Amino acid sequence: MAHEEVILLDFWPSMYGMRVRVALAEKGIKYEYKEQNLADKSPILLEMNPIFKKIPVLIHNGKPICESLNVVQYIDEVWKDKVTFLPSDLYEKYQALFWADYVEKVFDSGRKLWMEKGGEQQTRKDNYIDSLRMLEGILGDKPYFGGGKIGFLDIAFIGICSWFYTYEKFGEFSTEIEAPKIIAWVKMCMKMESVSKSVAEPLKVYDFALQIRKHYGLE
Ligand code: GS8
Image (cartoon, helix red, strand yellow):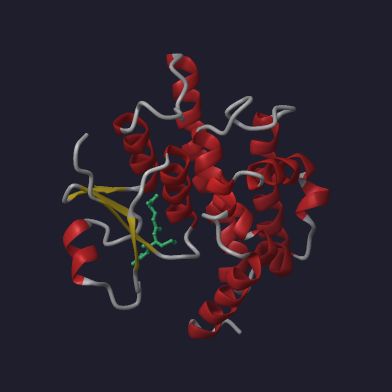
């Protein structure tokens, strides 16, 4: 393609945004990053994602693509000449898409650990760890979910590493003890600049979580 204009509407602690950042970095695509204030949404975000009004949004030559997994798949299909994220084998491809959808369950149970008050924190913790272990089982003894290299499911899931510290603090557990293979996988992924430069700093994320809790009167 001759002229490419690529813009990403994003918000730094977002695991969904991190998916797109890693995908763009893996493909070596230059883009303009536009940090969004989700408390006061910009005209461009409202115009580009009028349905959900959420980040991330990729704007490719003026046209928006919404929903992070959709965006990662779009990137994979448009910039085909570089590395590929989804396997060509159709069964393998749809397995990766299935588990990438499942990641939402892990994100959601993780969010409950720091965003919910009252009720049983132990149950929330058990739910989160169970969902994490489910993916640990899928990883098995492979270095990456994609096998010998980072793939679609790796990209869908890796942003969680920025949130581990927050989950551990609120859930009072160690991810290393509960899901050691997941930690080994994070370490492998972090060796790549496409990942290490795209994910948010865990302590900054924890600080952000504390601020949000204060804002919602949870502290
Ligand atoms: C989720 C994006 C999302 O929740 C995707 O892209 O995969 N299914 C979507 N984005 C959040 C920020 S990260 O938690 C967002 O933009 N929220 C703004 C709002 O809800 O108003």
